[in-house]
Structures are given as structure tokens and as C-alpha cells.
Image (tube, rainbow over all chains, first blue to last red; front, side, top):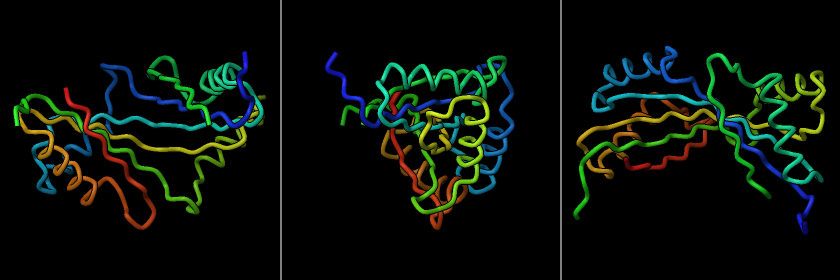
Length: 88
Length: 88
């Protein structure tokens, strides 16, 4: 398909599903009040993993990233995952 | 400026500066090899904090997010920070 098989980066964003208690967010919000930034109404956190691949087509890279998510990076019970292929 | 003062979200992305050892990335890459996903050439990680504000203009929200970064969310010695205002 004319797709260059160079460096492909896949960004995996892992966040807690709505309704799952996020202790880190709670703690940040409490700290911000103490640190005189009380205007923050809510905080949510996410972890982003950027996986780099060389010499692999984008579709293959995305499939491998999905495998990495299933096997290591996220827990489907509590996490919502967004996968974005970034190209070069 | 016709700017609506409704809900504003500011995304703060915190990652390690280049050259700072990222133990988590190393560990993920090692684990992915053991879990039969050896095609991943490198891994980098970032933490994303989404701060929500109500009834504050975007510029003010961004300034408050910068304050939160300075006081709590990042360490300028080791972290690179990207701040993006998301609007509603």
C-alpha cells in the first residue's frame, strides 16, 4: 500500500475507568488546596506508554501494541485504554 | 474576547528529560521480551494529569495549571512538561 516500514511509534494511554477510585487524583487535589491552588475542580490521571518499532508496518505495530496492552500494560477490569499510531 | 468562561480542562504531560534513566521503561521492555513481544525497540513513559476548572477563562486556567506544575506535579531538574488547554 506504499506504506513505508520505518520507525513507527504507538502511544498507549491507560486511565482508570469512570467509577474506579483514583487515589492519586484525590491526593493531588488535596495537595493543591494546601498549596494554594484551590481553583482546580477535579483531577484525573493517565499513564502514557510510547512504544517504538523499527521496520514494521503501522498495522503490525498497532497489533503488537495491543498485545503488549493485553499482556502487561493494562487491566481490563479497571482500565480504559486508547491506542494511537503516531507514524515516524 | 468573547471567550466563554465555562469548563476548561488543562492537560499536563510530565515525562522524564532525555538522558534521565527511566527504570519503568527498562522494566516494561524487559517484561515484553519475556512475554513474547520482543519487537518493541524502545519504551518511554509519561504521566498525564488533566485538571478541570469551572467558570475561569482559558488563560487563567492555564496559568493555574502552570502553578500546579511548579508547586507539585513536576520536578524541573528531571521532568519535561507539556501543557495543553483543551477547552470544554
